[in-house]
Length: 385
Image (cartoon, rainbow, N blue to C red; front, side, top):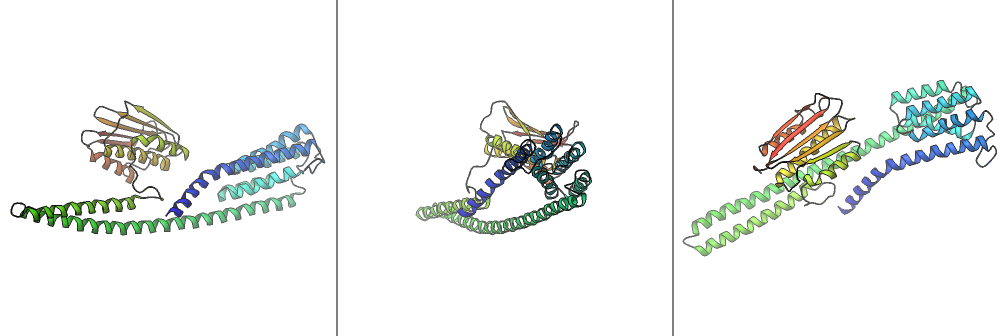
């Protein structure tokens, strides 16, 4: 379990760091090619230069930068990147000279590769068509040779994308198998829990009946019965705690950690912000400890509402308000998504919210907003907890 937990921790860390590392790599590639282009223009024959690149420097410099710097966005905006890069190359050849330096050729090939590797099929084909059309005027020598090079880079990108998709599919399949194994194991534990608790409760009932019958005539034997009840109860509680700890354990986390509440709300919001959902939080009234059940239900309602916004209403932002009243706590989660639903009032998430609110005699309103987006408003009385 410790090794598996460490592996999952490493995977989470890599998952967080990898996007930043890729963006940094792309930025360095763009800056490196831009620097090489300036060297080729102003220092022909110098270090790493393949020049001389002849032509009007007033045209060469901006077009060379326009061919190289957009590569920093080649993963996030691959289609726009390839069109800008090839457009700048076409403009350069029309105004002064073809981009025959190492920096220009490399930038064109990287752009063609990127639109194939990081776009869906429709955008990848559109990028290829745009690159080939623009290369008629900014050819790397002659048009036929340029098309061969561009097509080869584009084809390599599609091969890499297919391999990545295959690896992702295999990874998801493995995760599904692991989740299925966890579900089966937890079902087995639940059956064991039922057997243990049923046995202990049956023993308690039998001993209680015996103790009641003996309490007046044979108090010593009645005392033994009550001692047996105490032992059986402790055993049942111990087994119950152990089994529920195993059932609730997830991803190698602590088995008996405290349930979340509104004190962990800021941490939840930071997690949502980290995955791309802008959220504002407003606390009204004086925060204070709440009954455990109400505290947990309030946290889960906000969590479910934000999860629905993240899943169904993006791109959107959300505003969470928590109001501490004298006899209740009110929750409000508003989003400005384009649709009027974020999972629908009849989805499982909304149903779960209603059940939590109904348990404490509260109220829940969930539905589309007149100005667009979705709202969830809940009120949880404190006196019924």
